[in-house]
Image: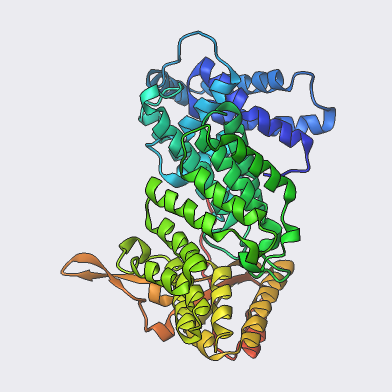
Length: 405
Length: 120
């Protein structure tokens, strides 16, 4: 998460490198992970007092290795060690870099045998270097619950017989997709929290951007990774304008654009310009391109909707789904009029994947309002309000409805 | 002593009948109350629940658990949200509830949370 503390930033950057090197030497991902966490806690305390050592990395390696050896001394863990060594054979010698180690860690934490919530938690701890308490706080669950989730995730990985190796080329693309999905979920968890009253948990979005930036540095030629990073930057750039002083949601069209973070917009645009056309197109790049068009518009009225619609047309071909159709309906409405958008929305009414979300009714309310049907809009907003699990969204929808009476 | 302060009913009737100004004041009031409980060190937990219409109730039918649509109680008696506060007396819990009821003009139920043995 964002810290004002240079020691913590340094530690969090080193965490995956030290863990990677340790696992490479000893196997036993789960025990090494605990040892690294302990070494980081020790470092945070000691370095704040006595200063940062000359080689912080070796310091952490030494302390973490010592913890590991201490752990082995107990009979219980010795038995466990024999099992784990068998389960996770160490890779042979060869040229191994921090880049490989951090990537391997990411792949391991996003292992397909894990549930999504476990993938998120483990990635934030092992690669992000966050403590269990910090992760628990971010996901609004008790610390003991999060500790258990992380511990079970590590057991699951061990049982799945995962090796500390990069996935074979045949699996790489699929595994990378999972990693990107996990990072995007962390981002979205922060950006539109699925529960609770704080719409933005900036620390999670910041962390997701940091980890995606890390991934991008390691695989700069993966167009979708660049696209994902650009998408996060271009979306997060609007953070300050997204809620007003009393914490109410401000829709995109009504946001004060001078509050948008221009540096983040510029960085996102540059990434996108560098990537588009040089790599195969994919859903993250396309969504980033849409976000870029919104960010570049000097005012809501000047938004290039025809271009956005064209992008959604491509997106619908590349990765079709009800959420894409929903977004495309808004673009259709802005280009061809609200009734055309509503007609497209109607095609989603029978879609079971939309039955559990408030978004269909929320968008319908918006388009009915544009079409000059306040009573219909009101009904849709109220229906959406009963379906959302976000307090702030509920508040926004009910206020919208109340104004249409 | 811990008390649970519970609001029952249907939020939807508010949205349909109250003015935008009143709704806005209500949101502000709830947020202020929530913050005041945190500031006073009495807040333990507090949650608003998604609308009762979205609830599923699992019942037993011929010996088999079966999920059915809708809340357990009548929709208008369904739980909307709650606070758990840790206070010195029941009187203080009632005082907190009274402040809220004075604004919302809706009843709140105040009930003690039973204590569990200390963790071993």
